[in-house]
Image (cartoon, rainbow over all chains, first blue to last red; front, side):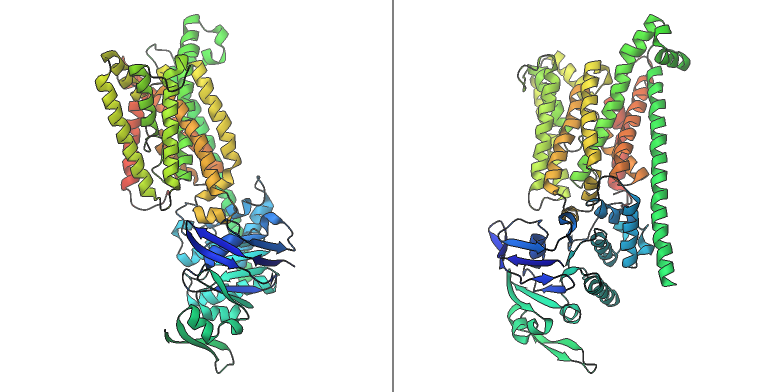
Length: 250
Length: 355
Protein backbone atom coordinates (compact mmCIF):
# COMPACT_ATOMS: atom_id res chain seq x y z
CA UNK A 1 0.00 0.00 0.00
CA UNK A 2 1.26 3.46 -0.87
CA UNK A 3 1.91 5.84 2.03
CA UNK A 4 2.58 9.54 1.62
CA UNK A 5 3.82 11.91 4.30
CA UNK A 6 5.66 15.22 4.34
CA UNK A 7 8.09 16.84 6.68
CA UNK A 8 8.58 20.61 6.89
CA UNK A 9 7.43 21.29 3.33
CA UNK A 10 7.92 24.90 2.23
CA UNK A 11 7.95 27.03 -0.91
CA UNK A 12 8.51 30.66 -1.79
CA UNK A 13 7.82 32.87 -4.78
CA UNK A 14 10.57 35.48 -4.78
CA UNK A 15 10.64 36.96 -1.30
CA UNK A 16 7.14 35.75 -0.46
CA UNK A 17 6.89 32.56 1.59
CA UNK A 18 3.75 30.82 0.33
CA UNK A 19 4.11 27.48 2.10
CA UNK A 20 5.65 27.07 5.55
CA UNK A 21 6.68 23.94 7.37
CA UNK A 22 3.79 21.72 6.26
CA UNK A 23 4.12 18.31 7.93
CA UNK A 24 1.36 15.99 6.79
CA UNK A 25 0.77 12.87 8.89
CA UNK A 26 0.86 9.61 6.90
CA UNK A 27 -1.88 9.38 4.24
CA UNK A 28 -2.60 5.84 3.03
CA UNK A 29 -3.64 4.29 -0.26
CA UNK A 30 -7.42 3.83 -0.25
CA UNK A 31 -8.07 7.21 1.37
CA UNK A 32 -9.56 10.43 0.04
CA UNK A 33 -7.83 13.37 1.69
CA UNK A 34 -9.49 16.72 1.08
CA UNK A 35 -7.19 19.73 1.16
CA UNK A 36 -9.21 22.79 2.06
CA UNK A 37 -8.47 26.38 2.95
CA UNK A 38 -9.38 29.92 1.96
CA UNK A 39 -7.95 31.61 -1.14
CA UNK A 40 -4.15 31.85 -1.14
CA UNK A 41 -3.90 29.32 1.70
CA UNK A 42 -1.26 27.38 -0.26
CA UNK A 43 -3.32 24.44 -1.57
CA UNK A 44 -2.05 24.58 -5.15
CA UNK A 45 1.48 25.26 -3.97
CA UNK A 46 1.34 22.21 -1.69
CA UNK A 47 0.20 20.07 -4.64
CA UNK A 48 3.00 21.39 -6.84
CA UNK A 49 5.51 20.62 -4.12
CA UNK A 50 4.09 17.10 -3.73
CA UNK A 51 4.27 16.61 -7.52
CA UNK A 52 7.92 17.76 -7.41
CA UNK A 53 7.21 20.54 -9.88
CA UNK A 54 8.15 23.31 -7.47
CA UNK A 55 11.42 23.37 -5.53
CA UNK A 56 11.48 24.27 -1.85
CA UNK A 57 12.33 23.27 1.69
CA UNK A 58 11.31 20.02 3.37
CA UNK A 59 10.77 16.48 2.28
CA UNK A 60 7.98 14.43 0.72
CA UNK A 61 8.16 10.71 1.55
CA UNK A 62 6.46 8.07 -0.56
CA UNK A 63 6.52 4.42 0.47
CA UNK A 64 5.10 1.32 -1.22
CA UNK A 65 5.66 2.67 -4.72
CA UNK A 66 5.57 0.23 -7.67
CA UNK A 67 7.00 2.52 -10.36
CA UNK A 68 8.54 5.84 -9.28
CA UNK A 69 8.00 7.47 -12.71
CA UNK A 70 4.26 7.04 -12.66
CA UNK A 71 3.52 6.91 -8.91
CA UNK A 72 2.01 10.39 -8.71
CA UNK A 73 -0.37 11.99 -11.20
CA UNK A 74 -1.17 15.65 -10.71
CA UNK A 75 -4.09 17.51 -12.22
CA UNK A 76 -3.46 21.28 -12.10
CA UNK A 77 -6.21 23.81 -11.60
CA UNK A 78 -5.60 25.51 -14.94
CA UNK A 79 -7.22 23.44 -17.67
CA UNK A 80 -7.31 26.06 -20.42
CA UNK A 81 -5.80 24.93 -23.70
CA UNK A 82 -5.83 26.32 -27.21
CA UNK A 83 -4.44 23.17 -28.78
CA UNK A 84 -6.26 21.60 -31.70
CA UNK A 85 -6.11 18.09 -30.26
CA UNK A 86 -8.95 15.64 -29.84
CA UNK A 87 -9.81 14.41 -26.36
CA UNK A 88 -8.41 11.00 -27.34
CA UNK A 89 -5.12 12.57 -28.44
CA UNK A 90 -4.90 14.71 -25.29
CA UNK A 91 -5.30 11.72 -23.01
CA UNK A 92 -2.89 9.69 -25.14
CA UNK A 93 -0.33 12.48 -24.72
CA UNK A 94 -0.49 12.10 -20.94
CA UNK A 95 -0.01 8.36 -21.31
CA UNK A 96 2.97 8.71 -23.64
CA UNK A 97 4.94 10.72 -21.08
CA UNK A 98 5.35 7.56 -19.02
CA UNK A 99 4.97 4.67 -21.46
CA UNK A 100 7.93 4.89 -23.77
CA UNK A 101 8.73 6.29 -27.16
CA UNK A 102 6.70 4.12 -29.48
CA UNK A 103 2.94 4.08 -29.68
CA UNK A 104 1.58 0.63 -28.80
CA UNK A 105 -1.84 -0.94 -28.81
CA UNK A 106 -1.69 -1.03 -25.00
CA UNK A 107 -1.51 2.80 -25.01
CA UNK A 108 -4.68 3.04 -27.07
CA UNK A 109 -6.43 0.52 -24.84
CA UNK A 110 -5.35 2.46 -21.72
CA UNK A 111 -6.83 5.65 -23.18
CA UNK A 112 -10.08 3.82 -23.92
CA UNK A 113 -10.23 2.55 -20.36
CA UNK A 114 -9.58 5.97 -18.83
CA UNK A 115 -12.29 7.56 -20.98
CA UNK A 116 -14.72 4.75 -20.21
CA UNK A 117 -14.02 5.03 -16.46
CA UNK A 118 -15.20 8.63 -16.55
CA UNK A 119 -18.07 7.91 -18.93
CA UNK A 120 -16.48 10.17 -21.54
CA UNK A 121 -16.50 7.87 -24.56
CA UNK A 122 -18.75 10.23 -26.48
CA UNK A 123 -16.21 13.05 -26.12
CA UNK A 124 -13.27 11.08 -27.55
CA UNK A 125 -13.30 12.78 -30.95
CA UNK A 126 -14.18 16.27 -29.73
CA UNK A 127 -11.57 19.03 -30.00
CA UNK A 128 -10.16 19.93 -26.59
CA UNK A 129 -10.26 23.71 -27.09
CA UNK A 130 -13.95 23.53 -27.98
CA UNK A 131 -15.01 21.79 -24.74
CA UNK A 132 -16.69 23.45 -21.78
CA UNK A 133 -14.73 24.11 -18.60
CA UNK A 134 -16.32 21.14 -16.88
CA UNK A 135 -15.57 18.80 -19.78
CA UNK A 136 -11.95 19.94 -19.77
CA UNK A 137 -11.74 19.10 -16.09
CA UNK A 138 -12.92 15.59 -16.91
CA UNK A 139 -10.22 15.37 -19.59
CA UNK A 140 -7.70 16.46 -16.94
CA UNK A 141 -8.91 13.66 -14.71
CA UNK A 142 -8.67 11.14 -17.57
CA UNK A 143 -5.10 12.35 -18.23
CA UNK A 144 -4.29 11.42 -14.63
CA UNK A 145 -6.03 8.04 -14.70
CA UNK A 146 -4.41 6.95 -17.96
CA UNK A 147 -1.01 7.04 -16.26
CA UNK A 148 -2.22 4.41 -13.77
CA UNK A 149 -0.85 6.24 -10.72
CA UNK A 150 -0.92 5.23 -7.07
CA UNK A 151 -1.34 8.79 -5.81
CA UNK A 152 -3.73 11.26 -7.41
CA UNK A 153 -3.32 14.98 -6.73
CA UNK A 154 -6.42 16.81 -7.93
CA UNK A 155 -6.40 20.59 -7.67
CA UNK A 156 -10.02 21.72 -7.55
CA UNK A 157 -11.24 19.27 -10.18
CA UNK A 158 -14.89 20.09 -9.57
CA UNK A 159 -14.80 23.90 -9.68
CA UNK A 160 -16.33 24.14 -13.17
CA UNK A 161 -18.81 21.27 -12.82
CA UNK A 162 -22.53 21.56 -12.19
CA UNK A 163 -23.96 20.05 -9.00
CA UNK A 164 -24.85 16.71 -10.60
CA UNK A 165 -21.40 16.31 -12.18
CA UNK A 166 -19.68 17.42 -8.97
CA UNK A 167 -21.36 14.59 -7.08
CA UNK A 168 -20.68 12.12 -9.91
CA UNK A 169 -17.01 13.13 -10.08
CA UNK A 170 -16.62 12.86 -6.30
CA UNK A 171 -18.24 9.43 -6.33
CA UNK A 172 -15.73 8.35 -8.99
CA UNK A 173 -12.86 9.81 -6.98
CA UNK A 174 -14.01 7.93 -3.89
CA UNK A 175 -14.32 4.73 -5.91
CA UNK A 176 -10.73 5.16 -7.20
CA UNK A 177 -9.56 5.31 -3.59
CA UNK A 178 -11.83 2.77 -1.94
CA UNK A 179 -12.06 0.22 -4.78
CA UNK A 180 -8.72 0.66 -6.59
CA UNK A 181 -6.56 1.50 -3.57
CA UNK A 182 -5.33 4.88 -4.81
CA UNK A 183 -4.47 7.66 -2.42
CA UNK A 184 -6.40 10.72 -3.58
CA UNK A 185 -5.52 14.21 -2.35
CA UNK A 186 -8.12 16.62 -3.60
CA UNK A 187 -8.26 20.39 -3.17
CA UNK A 188 -11.84 21.50 -2.67
CA UNK A 189 -13.54 24.85 -2.26
CA UNK A 190 -16.92 23.27 -1.65
CA UNK A 191 -16.69 22.25 2.01
CA UNK A 192 -19.86 20.15 1.82
CA UNK A 193 -18.13 17.86 -0.68
CA UNK A 194 -15.23 17.44 1.74
CA UNK A 195 -17.68 16.60 4.47
CA UNK A 196 -19.48 14.02 2.31
CA UNK A 197 -16.63 12.31 0.51
CA UNK A 198 -13.32 12.79 2.34
CA UNK A 199 -11.87 10.27 4.76
CA UNK A 200 -9.49 12.91 6.09
CA UNK A 201 -9.25 16.66 5.79
CA UNK A 202 -6.14 18.86 5.74
CA UNK A 203 -6.97 22.48 6.55
CA UNK A 204 -4.44 25.00 5.27
CA UNK A 205 -4.32 28.64 6.23
CA UNK A 206 -1.76 31.26 5.30
CA UNK A 207 0.66 28.65 3.95
CA UNK A 208 0.63 26.46 7.07
CA UNK A 209 -1.20 23.29 8.08
CA UNK A 210 -3.86 24.53 10.49
CA UNK A 211 -5.45 21.18 11.28
CA UNK A 212 -5.58 17.58 10.01
CA UNK A 213 -8.02 14.79 10.84
CA UNK A 214 -11.50 13.51 10.08
CA UNK A 215 -13.92 15.88 8.39
CA UNK A 216 -16.04 16.19 11.51
CA UNK A 217 -12.94 16.84 13.63
CA UNK A 218 -11.52 19.53 11.35
CA UNK A 219 -14.67 21.34 10.19
CA UNK A 220 -15.40 22.82 13.60
CA UNK A 221 -16.95 26.28 14.12
CA UNK A 222 -13.66 27.46 15.66
CA UNK A 223 -11.50 26.29 12.73
CA UNK A 224 -13.93 27.70 10.15
CA UNK A 225 -14.04 31.04 11.94
CA UNK A 226 -10.25 31.22 12.29
CA UNK A 227 -9.41 30.25 8.70
CA UNK A 228 -12.39 30.97 6.42
CA UNK A 229 -13.73 33.85 8.56
CA UNK A 230 -17.27 32.45 8.49
CA UNK A 231 -19.74 31.60 11.20
CA UNK A 232 -20.64 28.00 10.36
CA UNK A 233 -21.49 24.67 11.93
CA UNK A 234 -22.00 21.05 10.93
CA UNK A 235 -25.45 19.62 11.67
CA UNK A 236 -27.22 16.38 10.82
CA UNK A 237 -30.20 16.62 8.52
CA UNK A 238 -33.47 14.67 8.89
CA UNK A 239 -31.80 11.74 7.05
CA UNK A 240 -28.94 11.72 9.54
CA UNK A 241 -26.37 13.06 7.05
CA UNK A 242 -23.94 15.84 8.08
CA UNK A 243 -24.32 19.22 6.37
CA UNK A 244 -22.40 22.43 6.71
CA UNK A 245 -24.59 25.35 7.58
CA UNK A 246 -23.07 28.75 6.99
CA UNK A 247 -24.72 31.51 9.00
CA UNK A 248 -22.67 34.53 8.03
CA UNK A 249 -19.28 36.01 7.23
CA UNK A 250 -17.31 37.32 10.16
CA UNK B 1 -26.81 -1.50 -22.01
CA UNK B 2 -24.98 1.54 -20.72
CA UNK B 3 -21.71 -0.39 -20.47
CA UNK B 4 -22.11 -1.69 -24.01
CA UNK B 5 -22.92 1.79 -25.18
CA UNK B 6 -19.81 3.23 -23.45
CA UNK B 7 -17.62 0.47 -24.87
CA UNK B 8 -18.94 1.11 -28.36
CA UNK B 9 -18.26 4.83 -28.02
CA UNK B 10 -14.69 4.37 -26.79
CA UNK B 11 -14.01 1.80 -29.51
CA UNK B 12 -15.29 4.38 -31.96
CA UNK B 13 -12.78 6.74 -30.34
CA UNK B 14 -9.87 4.36 -30.92
CA UNK B 15 -10.93 3.51 -34.44
CA UNK B 16 -11.52 7.17 -35.21
CA UNK B 17 -8.00 7.93 -33.93
CA UNK B 18 -6.50 5.18 -36.08
CA UNK B 19 -8.46 6.39 -39.11
CA UNK B 20 -7.19 9.91 -38.42
CA UNK B 21 -3.62 8.61 -38.31
CA UNK B 22 -4.07 6.85 -41.66
CA UNK B 23 -5.44 10.07 -43.18
CA UNK B 24 -2.41 11.95 -41.85
CA UNK B 25 0.00 9.41 -43.35
CA UNK B 26 -1.75 9.86 -46.70
CA UNK B 27 -1.33 13.65 -46.41
CA UNK B 28 2.40 13.15 -45.77
CA UNK B 29 2.70 10.85 -48.79
CA UNK B 30 0.94 13.38 -51.01
CA UNK B 31 3.27 16.09 -49.72
CA UNK B 32 6.35 13.96 -50.46
CA UNK B 33 5.06 13.45 -53.98
CA UNK B 34 4.36 17.18 -54.30
CA UNK B 35 7.88 18.10 -53.19
CA UNK B 36 9.42 15.61 -55.64
CA UNK B 37 7.36 17.01 -58.52
CA UNK B 38 8.10 20.61 -57.54
CA UNK B 39 11.80 19.81 -57.30
CA UNK B 40 11.83 18.36 -60.81
CA UNK B 41 9.82 21.40 -61.95
CA UNK B 42 12.37 23.69 -60.34
CA UNK B 43 15.22 21.85 -62.05
CA UNK B 44 13.43 22.13 -65.40
CA UNK B 45 12.94 25.88 -65.09
CA UNK B 46 15.62 28.40 -65.92
CA UNK B 47 17.06 30.68 -68.57
CA UNK B 48 18.20 27.70 -70.69
CA UNK B 49 15.13 25.92 -71.93
CA UNK B 50 15.12 22.12 -71.65
CA UNK B 51 12.29 19.64 -71.84
CA UNK B 52 11.19 17.70 -68.76
CA UNK B 53 12.29 14.44 -70.35
CA UNK B 54 15.82 15.74 -70.92
CA UNK B 55 16.06 16.92 -67.32
CA UNK B 56 14.86 13.58 -65.94
CA UNK B 57 17.29 11.72 -68.23
CA UNK B 58 20.18 13.89 -67.01
CA UNK B 59 19.14 13.24 -63.44
CA UNK B 60 18.85 9.49 -63.85
CA UNK B 61 21.70 8.91 -66.33
CA UNK B 62 24.11 11.84 -65.95
CA UNK B 63 26.91 10.03 -67.80
CA UNK B 64 24.83 9.86 -70.99
CA UNK B 65 23.80 13.53 -70.97
CA UNK B 66 25.78 16.14 -72.90
CA UNK B 67 28.40 18.05 -70.87
CA UNK B 68 26.67 21.46 -70.97
CA UNK B 69 23.39 20.02 -69.81
CA UNK B 70 25.13 18.06 -67.06
CA UNK B 71 26.81 21.21 -65.77
CA UNK B 72 23.59 23.23 -65.84
CA UNK B 73 21.51 20.56 -64.11
CA UNK B 74 24.04 19.18 -61.63
CA UNK B 75 26.28 22.16 -60.87
CA UNK B 76 23.98 25.16 -61.25
CA UNK B 77 20.36 24.16 -60.84
CA UNK B 78 20.70 21.21 -58.47
CA UNK B 79 22.45 23.01 -55.56
CA UNK B 80 20.02 25.90 -55.68
CA UNK B 81 16.94 23.65 -56.07
CA UNK B 82 18.05 21.39 -53.21
CA UNK B 83 18.99 24.42 -51.12
CA UNK B 84 15.42 25.66 -51.63
CA UNK B 85 14.06 22.36 -50.32
CA UNK B 86 16.44 22.21 -47.34
CA UNK B 87 15.94 25.87 -46.43
CA UNK B 88 12.18 25.38 -46.65
CA UNK B 89 12.44 22.36 -44.35
CA UNK B 90 14.66 24.21 -41.86
CA UNK B 91 12.60 27.41 -41.72
CA UNK B 92 9.27 25.59 -41.47
CA UNK B 93 10.43 23.26 -38.70
CA UNK B 94 12.03 26.21 -36.93
CA UNK B 95 8.79 28.17 -37.19
CA UNK B 96 6.69 25.22 -36.00
CA UNK B 97 8.87 24.76 -32.92
CA UNK B 98 8.99 28.49 -32.17
CA UNK B 99 5.22 28.54 -32.24
CA UNK B 100 5.21 25.52 -29.94
CA UNK B 101 7.69 26.68 -27.31
CA UNK B 102 6.44 30.27 -27.22
CA UNK B 103 2.83 29.08 -27.46
CA UNK B 104 2.32 31.76 -30.06
CA UNK B 105 0.72 31.33 -33.50
CA UNK B 106 2.56 34.35 -34.90
CA UNK B 107 6.02 33.22 -33.86
CA UNK B 108 8.48 32.64 -36.69
CA UNK B 109 12.05 33.66 -37.49
CA UNK B 110 10.69 36.45 -39.68
CA UNK B 111 8.10 37.96 -37.33
CA UNK B 112 10.25 37.75 -34.20
CA UNK B 113 13.15 39.67 -35.71
CA UNK B 114 15.61 36.78 -36.13
CA UNK B 115 15.77 37.27 -39.89
CA UNK B 116 16.08 41.05 -39.44
CA UNK B 117 18.89 40.44 -36.95
CA UNK B 118 20.64 38.21 -39.46
CA UNK B 119 20.30 40.93 -42.11
CA UNK B 120 21.86 43.46 -39.76
CA UNK B 121 24.75 41.11 -38.97
CA UNK B 122 25.31 40.44 -42.66
CA UNK B 123 25.17 44.15 -43.47
CA UNK B 124 27.90 44.86 -40.90
CA UNK B 125 30.17 42.58 -42.88
CA UNK B 126 29.04 43.74 -46.32
CA UNK B 127 29.26 47.45 -45.54
CA UNK B 128 32.28 47.76 -43.27
CA UNK B 129 33.89 44.31 -43.16
CA UNK B 130 33.18 43.99 -39.43
CA UNK B 131 33.71 40.34 -38.40
CA UNK B 132 31.78 39.24 -35.31
CA UNK B 133 33.48 35.85 -35.54
CA UNK B 134 37.29 35.99 -35.80
CA UNK B 135 38.81 34.13 -38.75
CA UNK B 136 35.45 33.56 -40.47
CA UNK B 137 37.24 34.03 -43.82
CA UNK B 138 34.93 33.62 -46.81
CA UNK B 139 32.04 32.99 -44.46
CA UNK B 140 32.24 36.40 -42.73
CA UNK B 141 28.75 37.43 -43.95
CA UNK B 142 27.14 34.15 -42.94
CA UNK B 143 28.97 34.08 -39.59
CA UNK B 144 27.86 37.62 -38.72
CA UNK B 145 24.28 36.85 -39.72
CA UNK B 146 24.36 33.71 -37.59
CA UNK B 147 25.72 35.44 -34.47
CA UNK B 148 23.16 38.25 -34.50
CA UNK B 149 20.31 35.85 -35.30
CA UNK B 150 21.27 33.63 -32.34
CA UNK B 151 21.56 36.64 -30.02
CA UNK B 152 18.09 37.77 -31.10
CA UNK B 153 16.62 34.34 -30.42
CA UNK B 154 18.10 34.32 -26.91
CA UNK B 155 16.78 37.80 -26.21
CA UNK B 156 13.30 36.58 -27.09
CA UNK B 157 13.77 33.53 -24.90
CA UNK B 158 14.87 35.64 -21.93
CA UNK B 159 11.83 37.86 -22.39
CA UNK B 160 9.52 34.83 -22.52
CA UNK B 161 10.92 33.62 -19.17
CA UNK B 162 9.99 36.84 -17.37
CA UNK B 163 7.14 36.46 -14.93
CA UNK B 164 3.91 37.68 -16.47
CA UNK B 165 5.33 37.55 -20.00
CA UNK B 166 2.32 37.28 -22.29
CA UNK B 167 1.94 36.17 -25.89
CA UNK B 168 1.21 39.77 -26.86
CA UNK B 169 4.38 40.97 -25.15
CA UNK B 170 6.56 38.52 -27.08
CA UNK B 171 4.96 39.47 -30.41
CA UNK B 172 5.38 43.17 -29.62
CA UNK B 173 9.01 42.55 -28.65
CA UNK B 174 9.49 40.79 -31.98
CA UNK B 175 7.98 43.75 -33.84
CA UNK B 176 10.20 46.13 -31.84
CA UNK B 177 13.25 44.03 -32.77
CA UNK B 178 12.28 44.03 -36.46
CA UNK B 179 11.97 47.84 -36.39
CA UNK B 180 15.19 48.25 -34.41
CA UNK B 181 17.23 46.11 -36.79
CA UNK B 182 15.64 47.78 -39.82
CA UNK B 183 16.53 51.19 -38.41
CA UNK B 184 20.09 50.08 -37.69
CA UNK B 185 20.26 48.64 -41.21
CA UNK B 186 19.08 51.95 -42.68
CA UNK B 187 21.81 53.79 -40.75
CA UNK B 188 24.41 51.33 -42.04
CA UNK B 189 23.17 51.77 -45.60
CA UNK B 190 23.31 55.56 -45.25
CA UNK B 191 27.00 55.45 -44.37
CA UNK B 192 27.97 52.54 -46.62
CA UNK B 193 29.47 52.79 -50.11
CA UNK B 194 27.10 52.50 -53.06
CA UNK B 195 28.37 49.06 -54.03
CA UNK B 196 27.96 47.77 -50.48
CA UNK B 197 24.39 49.11 -50.35
CA UNK B 198 23.56 47.14 -53.51
CA UNK B 199 25.03 44.01 -51.93
CA UNK B 200 23.05 44.55 -48.72
CA UNK B 201 19.80 45.09 -50.61
CA UNK B 202 20.36 41.92 -52.67
CA UNK B 203 21.24 39.94 -49.54
CA UNK B 204 18.15 41.07 -47.62
CA UNK B 205 15.91 39.97 -50.48
CA UNK B 206 17.06 36.38 -50.11
CA UNK B 207 18.28 34.39 -53.09
CA UNK B 208 18.96 30.75 -53.81
CA UNK B 209 21.54 31.70 -56.43
CA UNK B 210 24.02 32.03 -53.55
CA UNK B 211 23.68 28.29 -52.92
CA UNK B 212 26.75 26.11 -53.23
CA UNK B 213 27.31 22.43 -52.43
CA UNK B 214 29.26 23.20 -49.19
CA UNK B 215 26.54 25.59 -47.97
CA UNK B 216 23.92 23.03 -48.87
CA UNK B 217 25.84 20.34 -46.98
CA UNK B 218 26.10 22.48 -43.81
CA UNK B 219 22.40 23.39 -43.88
CA UNK B 220 21.40 19.77 -44.53
CA UNK B 221 23.67 18.65 -41.69
CA UNK B 222 21.97 21.04 -39.24
CA UNK B 223 18.56 19.77 -40.35
CA UNK B 224 19.79 16.18 -40.14
CA UNK B 225 21.06 16.69 -36.60
CA UNK B 226 18.13 18.64 -35.18
CA UNK B 227 15.15 16.87 -36.73
CA UNK B 228 15.82 13.52 -34.97
CA UNK B 229 16.08 15.34 -31.63
CA UNK B 230 12.71 16.96 -32.20
CA UNK B 231 11.17 13.69 -33.30
CA UNK B 232 12.56 11.97 -30.22
CA UNK B 233 10.88 14.59 -28.04
CA UNK B 234 7.66 14.60 -30.05
CA UNK B 235 5.39 13.62 -27.16
CA UNK B 236 6.86 16.24 -24.83
CA UNK B 237 6.75 18.96 -27.47
CA UNK B 238 3.16 18.18 -28.38
CA UNK B 239 2.25 18.26 -24.68
CA UNK B 240 3.60 21.82 -24.46
CA UNK B 241 0.59 22.86 -26.51
CA UNK B 242 -1.63 21.85 -23.59
CA UNK B 243 -0.16 24.75 -21.63
CA UNK B 244 2.77 25.05 -19.27
CA UNK B 245 0.90 23.95 -16.15
CA UNK B 246 -0.42 20.76 -17.71
CA UNK B 247 2.87 19.90 -19.41
CA UNK B 248 4.68 20.36 -16.08
CA UNK B 249 2.06 18.19 -14.39
CA UNK B 250 3.06 15.38 -16.79
CA UNK B 251 6.58 15.61 -15.37
CA UNK B 252 7.99 17.47 -18.38
CA UNK B 253 10.87 19.81 -17.48
CA UNK B 254 9.23 22.67 -19.37
CA UNK B 255 11.92 25.33 -18.96
CA UNK B 256 14.75 23.02 -19.94
CA UNK B 257 12.80 21.68 -22.91
CA UNK B 258 12.07 25.23 -24.09
CA UNK B 259 15.67 26.34 -23.76
CA UNK B 260 17.10 23.30 -25.53
CA UNK B 261 14.50 23.55 -28.30
CA UNK B 262 15.22 27.25 -28.72
CA UNK B 263 18.95 26.60 -29.11
CA UNK B 264 18.24 24.03 -31.82
CA UNK B 265 15.63 26.23 -33.49
CA UNK B 266 18.05 29.17 -33.49
CA UNK B 267 20.61 27.02 -35.28
CA UNK B 268 17.99 25.71 -37.65
CA UNK B 269 16.79 29.16 -38.68
CA UNK B 270 20.00 31.18 -38.41
CA UNK B 271 22.06 28.89 -40.67
CA UNK B 272 19.80 29.07 -43.76
CA UNK B 273 19.20 32.79 -43.33
CA UNK B 274 22.96 33.31 -43.04
CA UNK B 275 23.55 31.43 -46.32
CA UNK B 276 20.69 32.54 -48.54
CA UNK B 277 19.53 35.81 -46.96
CA UNK B 278 16.14 36.80 -45.63
CA UNK B 279 13.38 34.48 -46.76
CA UNK B 280 10.14 35.62 -45.26
CA UNK B 281 7.02 33.86 -44.10
CA UNK B 282 8.03 30.23 -44.78
CA UNK B 283 8.52 29.70 -41.03
CA UNK B 284 5.14 31.20 -40.32
CA UNK B 285 2.95 29.94 -43.14
CA UNK B 286 4.44 26.44 -43.56
CA UNK B 287 3.58 25.21 -40.04
CA UNK B 288 0.10 26.74 -40.14
CA UNK B 289 -0.80 25.04 -43.42
CA UNK B 290 0.64 21.79 -42.02
CA UNK B 291 -1.35 22.18 -38.79
CA UNK B 292 -4.56 22.65 -40.80
CA UNK B 293 -3.84 19.38 -42.62
CA UNK B 294 -2.52 17.10 -39.86
CA UNK B 295 -3.22 18.74 -36.48
CA UNK B 296 -0.87 19.32 -33.57
CA UNK B 297 0.63 15.85 -33.08
CA UNK B 298 4.33 16.45 -33.73
CA UNK B 299 4.78 12.98 -35.21
CA UNK B 300 2.84 14.36 -38.17
CA UNK B 301 3.19 18.12 -37.71
CA UNK B 302 7.00 18.10 -37.98
CA UNK B 303 7.26 16.19 -41.26
CA UNK B 304 4.20 17.95 -42.65
CA UNK B 305 5.67 21.38 -41.78
CA UNK B 306 9.01 20.39 -43.28
CA UNK B 307 7.40 19.16 -46.49
CA UNK B 308 5.06 22.15 -46.75
CA UNK B 309 8.01 24.52 -46.28
CA UNK B 310 9.98 22.64 -48.93
CA UNK B 311 7.03 22.65 -51.32
CA UNK B 312 6.41 26.39 -50.93
CA UNK B 313 10.11 27.10 -51.47
CA UNK B 314 10.31 24.95 -54.61
CA UNK B 315 7.15 26.47 -56.07
CA UNK B 316 8.39 29.97 -55.18
CA UNK B 317 11.69 29.18 -56.86
CA UNK B 318 9.85 28.21 -60.05
CA UNK B 319 7.73 31.36 -59.83
CA UNK B 320 10.83 33.49 -59.25
CA UNK B 321 12.26 32.17 -62.52
CA UNK B 322 9.17 32.50 -64.70
CA UNK B 323 7.45 35.61 -63.26
CA UNK B 324 9.60 38.10 -65.17
CA UNK B 325 10.86 36.80 -68.55
CA UNK B 326 14.64 36.97 -68.79
CA UNK B 327 15.19 37.63 -65.08
CA UNK B 328 15.29 35.62 -61.86
CA UNK B 329 13.57 37.39 -58.97
CA UNK B 330 15.08 37.01 -55.49
CA UNK B 331 13.07 34.20 -53.92
CA UNK B 332 12.47 36.24 -50.73
CA UNK B 333 10.25 38.58 -52.73
CA UNK B 334 8.13 35.67 -53.97
CA UNK B 335 7.77 33.98 -50.56
CA UNK B 336 6.77 37.33 -49.02
CA UNK B 337 4.25 37.93 -51.79
CA UNK B 338 2.71 34.52 -51.08
CA UNK B 339 3.11 34.66 -47.32
CA UNK B 340 1.79 38.12 -46.59
CA UNK B 341 -1.85 37.41 -47.54
CA UNK B 342 -1.73 34.19 -45.48
CA UNK B 343 -0.23 36.13 -42.55
CA UNK B 344 -3.02 38.71 -42.77
CA UNK B 345 -5.58 35.92 -42.96
CA UNK B 346 -4.17 34.39 -39.77
CA UNK B 347 -4.42 37.71 -37.95
CA UNK B 348 -7.85 38.71 -39.18
CA UNK B 349 -9.74 35.43 -39.34
CA UNK B 350 -12.36 34.61 -36.77
CA UNK B 351 -12.43 31.38 -34.82
CA UNK B 352 -9.47 29.36 -33.58
CA UNK B 353 -9.83 26.17 -35.54
CA UNK B 354 -6.10 25.92 -36.31
CA UNK B 355 -4.63 27.25 -33.07
